[in-house]
View (cartoon, each protein chain N blue to C red):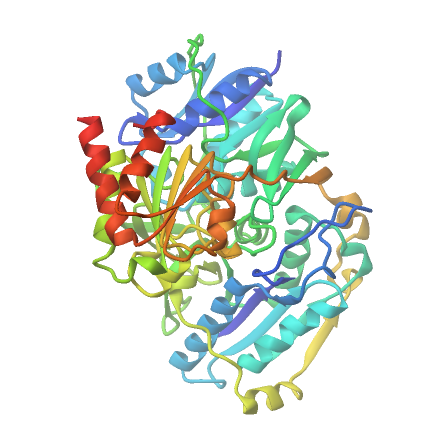
Length: 267
Length: 317
């Protein structure tokens, strides 16, 4: 069993984020860079699947990222948590790619690595589109099992099958498919481990392959700001909200709120 | 004038409110057409006409719900081909965005998600980074596919022609790669969906326990509101994960948002900052949520919220 976990390096989700005025792309220097939190859940799920299948002899976990030089830190984090190896797709031409272009790069890498299972977070905390897993399934012709709150794998049969609980507004759907498949996970699925000291030391020796667009056979013109099919035209800071009224409860706080709701015609 | 397609969201024979919002928006961009997929009744088609659709494209069949997303993409693609539409609007729900994503790849079209408005020429307005930044985005290739957040525009129904066109859709084997074997409902019946609700009542760390959410639910029910929760509350297991509002949960933009026992860290603000009116109850006067509010009360929610529920019930009686 071969698992590839797609991870994205994003600005720290607890920090204020900015756009770059020169080309309207994300200002990646304005905040500390971290692994997209939801992708950590995907890494953890991959590691747990490997453990259930009997460890490294039965299953390998590869961490894949697309991004600038610094993005290798997000691969390292996965290796420290326990993944076996990493792949970093890096190319200056990729800067400014939208989701459609990014999914093209990822899909080419997935085709090259040919995993049984692709795992990833259901969205990134910076762009928050939640579209790349579906695009990857579309591009690679693999079944789409997204928003998984639970993943069960049957690797004994051939081809293996995967069953998830797809989280919905009303609860969840149980969805099944044959491998190879694309699965995205939500945060309730597990509790990601922290890298141990041993894990951090071991990660230094783990191999990370670097790939360019040429290696993947992707045209530079198909990605980046020029190859993207959508773009930001302009942006501005939202004007701050006008200061509201804050009162201290003197036993009539609920009534005061009701008065406000009445005045605003909500009740 | 060119057609603008609206992907219809419907359940149990009823059209969801967001569909009427999108039809209203479509009217400002061209000739509004609805695309309705799944179990389609005559009443459903009629209510889409009443909501403003001049053409209603119908892909009827029970199979659409049996597989994740892909067959619906094929149906929407068929509607796009039949109509030659200038643009496609879908609701920015989890499934709506996935349908849009796959349609974009299939048709070589650009996609914009989480728009809060769409101007002439399909220039989308987005509110990003937790509502701190307003952005204008546009599609440069193919047919603009734009996912619009519920509650972004007020629905103004205006009777459309309602011409019905049944689509000839060929669902492929690739569309059937996944199988939905079971649907499990966990949400209490009778409450509006979090994404769509006009009023959302949320609870956070200050609620204190799973039992504490009873007061939040009572207030929500008195107002006909949806219930939300902060990450602190869902992480603690006090309320189910799918109700989380925030950066790693749902983004809501209701007319009224009432935050109870929620401090207002950026993690939470990112999911609710664009609400039209914000009320907060929190015992900490320094809580950042108070920077956002139209009205706030410093105090114990376990005293204030039940009193509020009683007042709302009395005044509405």
